[in-house]
Amino acid sequence: MQTIDKFNFAGKKAFVRVDFNVPLDENFNITDDTRIRAALPTLKKILADGGSVIIGSHLGRPKGPADKFSLKHILAPVSKLIGVDVQFANDCMGEEAVAKSAALKPGEALLLENLRFYAEEEGKPRGLAEDASDEEKAAAKKVVKASQKEFTKKLASYADCYVNDAFGTAHRAHASTALIANYFDTDNKMFGFLMNQEVVAVDKVMTDIQRPFTAIMGGSKVSSKIEIIENLLSKVDNLIIAGGMTYTFAKANGGKIGQSICEDDKLDLALSLIAKAKELGVNLVLAVDAKIADNFSNDANTQFVPVGEIPDGWEGLDIGPKTEAMFAEVIKNSKTILWNGPTGVFEFDNFTSGSRAVGNAIAEATANGAFSLVGGGDSVACVNKFGLADKVSYVSTGGGALLEAIEGKILPGIAAIKE
Image (cartoon, rainbow, N blue to C red; front, side, top):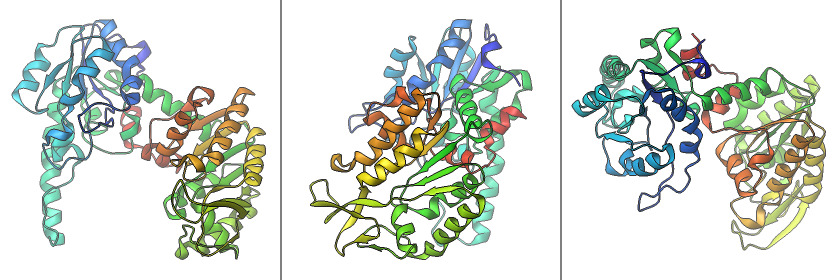
């Protein structure tokens, strides 16, 4: 497999798929440029070699061309960060894109308009009536799939080589994230620096495990994490359940949870996971106390109670101090750590204590030689909020992609390069 560090881009045009799906305010100012900064090493390497870059990305979830999803809004900051005056093609399939790509000189960069303005990027039909029949849906999908091939082939024609540096979309078999790789031979397609770091980090926690291995899984629903939890139970020594899932497990164990979030139809599932953990010898760590509130608000009245003794009218919004200490003890004695999901409603300052305690414990374990991977939007927001991003081994840029990798799924964007 080709690697970007050994590839010389001199005189070559590289199509680089990045994830510039950044948050914008009402005036189209970028409020967090982390994703753009993450791609800079790859883009600057190509330009420094004497190559030129054609940058492809999506922004938001448009259902067709829409000004609010136009990548023109980020052109100036991208140019400033890369250090060159990046050109712009206002239609990724238009004559302008073809002409500007062909005219690119070494050291120049071109940003294509939002790839998802075309249904062919995702390969999904648009504009179908809600009451469309299965036959109509199948026909529409067939049309899009047929045109997707031409869409992909045209994107590939702009460049001499392909670089995928968008781990955040690696779980999608989209035109620019996976299918385009088929138009380049093995020597001319590769991961960017960011993508490679992500792949190495995931491989390290899933295959190159130093024990004890602890996973901290947060989130509100057991149902959304079931495949991840089941996959992890065969790999970890300790599995910490946090966040809203806490109360489904508490109720399944016969506890009273008041108004706390709970999936009543997943109580049997929770019990089966408890049984499976015991069968596999996994230390399943569940909260013993909770910080509860009489309203879903930062300013609500609060108290600490055992997690299975929450009064009616109250709800758990974070773990309690006994649980913080218990979680921290397990984490500090670990050598491999995966964190996905906060312990509570960390967006409210009065309910950040649990997530902060977990983050601090991970930072301490990392300082003592553990490998720690933090991923998933809320977990990343936690470490950034608490100033811990540089105190863990790796912070993943992927949300859904990371979760699917943890589930053990093969990601199309990775497979397309490794094939």
